[in-house]
Image: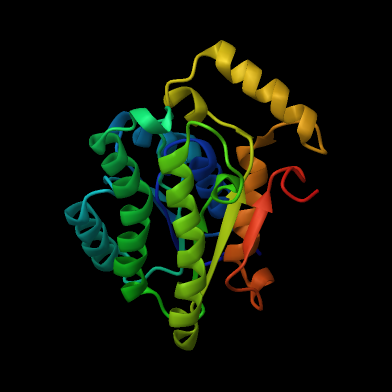
Length: 249
């Protein structure tokens, strides 16, 4: 038996990286999974890679209309959501003094607004015993130059995990968060950093991380599975840090 047998799970931002790794693991553990993303081709490739018990729905989590359409599709096709991994997020790094209003809105709308309303709409379909896992970041508590908007949104999502725990616990719904550290995914390349910049970031970080390496998307996915499953039935409101010990010592 799998840990998620018979469960309906939704993973936003599920076409790559941590979202794809979590979706694949959820399916392996017995769930039927809906993945979302902006890039149709990437979504189709992710669904093909997972191979079974997965539906890919094109959806931009910064748009409330897309979230409403996602809710309607899930209600029609599955009738409920047992697990939500609110993973979709983005970053456009740059100096604080050069952040434009458009860049600010892009980060806030995708990360904070998108997470907020995705949870708001989909918990309407969630029965008692459901689990919501939010994707935060160690940047919510650890300051790095150039990531002001991203870090602020992730800190806000950490706060959201606490308040939603208080609000949804009476309905039997658990809310928690996973905070990845330096994880080897394509996201860091997609935000516009050069290979040389990435190598420098990694080299500096690995000297500070007790385990002296980057984490993998699969390692984050295992933490998400734990929080989403009955193994964490008495855990709520926490932020589980997956960073090789970087922020802990």
